[in-house]
Amino acid sequence: MTSTRRIIVICSGNICRSPMALALLRHKLDDHNIPAVVISGGTLGIHGRRAATAARQVICESDPDDETGMASWIAEHRSQGLSPAMLRMADDLVVMAPRHEHYIEQIAPSLIDRVVRLWQYAQVDIPLTKIPDPVGQDVEVFRRCRDLISECLDGWIDEKLKPQ
Image (tube, rainbow, N blue to C red; front, top):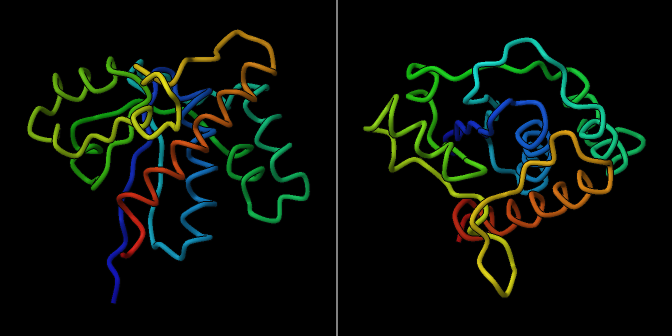
């Protein structure tokens, strides 16, 4: 029997990058039959906000008929902050930028070995230093962010999560 991975996707406000990543990751893990529970949270401690309108739009564009559930997942999303207890429950802490890793190091230093720097899985010539935050920008920036997150998730899943 395969154990279920517990994954937290982390960004700042938990309204743009991490909700998109949560929807994409759940779908990708389902496609690969990798059992996992995926949640998201933010380092700013914002509670109860919906995902940004543009984030919802670009995820719905990826699955217009909601056959994979991505549109439903992001529509139901409400932001939440992180706590040391929540972080301790996870096997993987997927961060979008170094500041999120530093936050984990400050509030739960013993968990730093669980951090996944998502940007390191991008297929680019020049290494990235983060997944850029699209907050407050137009929908095209959100599309590029969605596509980058998707590419990085594919790389991480292929390298670290898929059975060899």
